[in-house]
Length: 307
Image: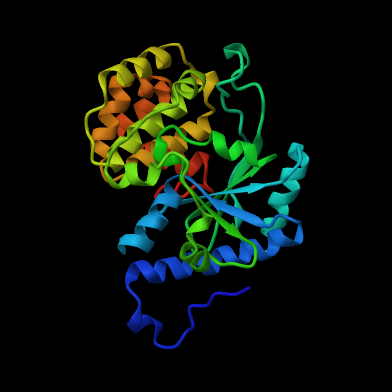
């Protein structure tokens, strides 16, 4: 299975967005081929990456992806050792360099669970790869495909592109049966209608959820958070502390905001919700202007422009 940018006259015949899609397809094909060797035959593009790719394909909009969010289904419950082994293999295969000091657990809240058990059950693990052609590839390994139905905070987060082995990204987009959109989320995205539906996740992990909510509204150029949602965020964050998010992930969240187009508005929301109060030392570094120097010294493997 191959897709190549070396086709005749390609630079003359394709738009910038189409060239970007071809480049991503070429990169992902390498991942597909290697993961096929360990019996993983479906690769899923999720989150903002799925929406950006659909924007490029249907509307010829230039891609602006920092993280290419992907998911793979193992079909069995795996230990951390097994996922670290896969992380080592991705590096050995030459797919990229792992920049995650720890695996990220996928322990969301399930609506059928008792609230006291929210976040206690783990559905998978993930890590980040820095690659040659895509700034960051986020790889999430889920134990079952049921976990894919639990993704997202907004309806547009539930839009997924499934790339089966034997097809590259372009061929997948041409066959719309590989686009999974149970909540009509992509239409909401195009209409700039942020429909939030995951209150249980905001209660379970208010810090990360609030970062994502603020950044999602900014991406849609929607600069007024609904009052009821804003008050819920403030209330949940007020009960949070540093133990609820490690310094590395918090730093990445801040860096993402600083690199966003509407950074100023997002920073105002971080202040008003109390998110910036969780790590006073980091807030002080931002105020003093030495935050980037601190990041470079503390996390030298992090690219401050593509965290």
